Length: 305
View (tube, rainbow, N blue to C red):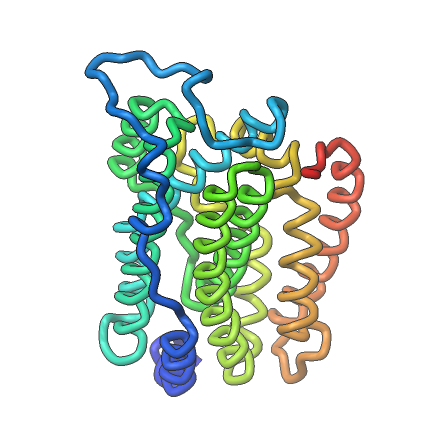
């Protein structure tokens, strides 16, 4: 089945999932969560210092990693115009798909507002460096680019879940209750986004299992978080992984195994063509190999307590 045919076939499911989302998503307001009383004016030309920070990392050892995670989390949200463009091109702007894409964009925009305001008030990150990085990130327009709709459905499911995990774990690594609440609130929204894409992918698997398995295999093999366009992203990712906010073990244990293997029941699918059978075999082998590598790397992790 081609992509347009698949979209037509599963659009009723998309409508049901959209209505489910709108029924459970809670309205909230960034201005009610940000502790503005803790802020003060920035003097023009003033040099930011680490000692200015008031975001309550659990320990000095955690501060750089938490700051790196907040920095990456916000910059990925700032690339929202390109995410909207790609989703609009993949799914179209009519019907349930169009309504979902616009609502998703509005909700994601709220995340960048609350995180940025919190970072500004608490002086957790150098605001000049952050703004320059935002300009560079948006100017470059670098975002992960799934090859087709099948890969996109798998990628979006995994990426939204990964984002939820990263946000929540960042909050857990902070002693500041306000910061914890903000990252938990954002994480809750990301979880609802994940559920939409996961269940839409489930519907697509039921309709076109062969193309979806091929797409899932490619999404797992090429998976990259949306921060890949951020300058020095590799170093920042290592810092984030070092303290267990998001690393390969989390990716394996909380995404690949529960979603790809268990929820999508990869091993139980029937009626696959020969290409999809090869993709499934390669995918199961890859996930097993990732698990073995992740278990070795996890020993070097500094855990959040």
